Image (cartoon, rainbow, N blue to C red; front, side, top):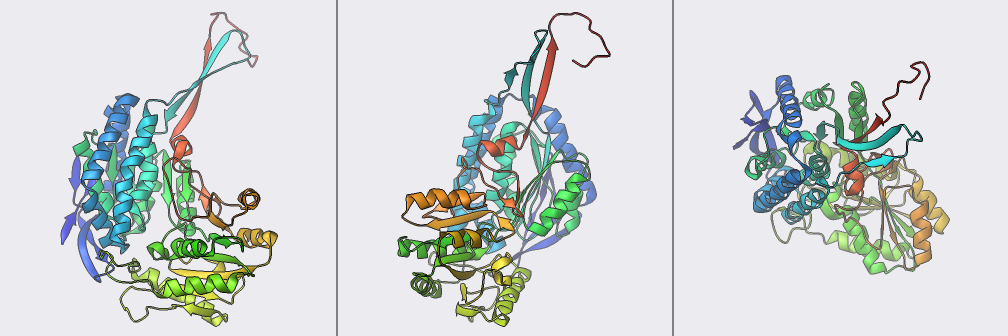
Length: 485
């Protein structure tokens, strides 16, 4: 097995001990990954601080932009290796991981364009004897804690704007999919970045992430993952008053009205939940379908779901790979079994379908209300529930009746309804006659228990900048020291 080291400053550090990264399709370990100690975390944060206060912090925005573009070129050259590492780690389709990795240079190109355009503003102080301005400055050292489902894409959501802003980063990948991020760190030296700008610490132990998030040398935390872990991360960051950006779970509604193109809508429901085997925070896991077309749409989805090709994620004909790790498979099966006990109708799927291993069939559930367990909890697997509604008001009520608020989809030909619905839905992203598409220029994030803060777009850049107010006295006169103003 290949030995995968961490990057700390200029050093490739193998770790005193290692843990295995498991291939969910082949069912065994394929890489040995360094296990970080508390000392490794200290050293990584120190390396990031030294780069921030030293060579990286001394660069102009134009010089940062040049390096960001060079990093994009290195990603493009290494795309095949990085994509295969992600597929071996998490079992998602190689063609999807390849598409994600090849899209990443556009993120770095986009944020490179901001690096030399971070500007402040002059403020009217209301005082003729003072000149005032506001500058925007990098927050400092950022801790990025990543999930296993799309490691490099979700890292880039954080890393590209952080680098453009002038920050340095310590990344902690998931223990279930660490390899691509650790390999990615090697590209920074090739691109010409100073040591310490991007550092990695890995570990199978939850302690590694906690050491990083609680570290007093970390100035900001950015986390993507589950709601429960996100709450713990926010508390740990708050222990030393570091602000946090949290992109958490979802239970997103994909809403079909009777005037929609039903073939396109059914395809959108398939894409929303069965792509990536449902292992995505934006999964459209709740299908809300108008009663007039409920049976027709459910039949269309069931027919297509039943024909989805499961198998080797590196195969060109495969449409769905395995679940990432055994604990996640057990969680999915538990929720489906719970739905059965509640009286659900399992239209399609419900188990491994004879595939064995870590496979779980595309599953479509009807016959349960919106307040059932399977309709309320994030399953993070290929399980779609379908619930009928009678009118627009009921659709809004059902969609918003969730503790999550990450995303939603609307399928309709009525443009007036589009404006009403997009305003009424309490989510961070709404797709209209489409589902599951992202771009560097569009902000991404949720409301309610789906987290706070935004990634991508100009909003994502702002997460890594802080404003400084500067007052300059212009007359030289002495004033009364005991009077405010």
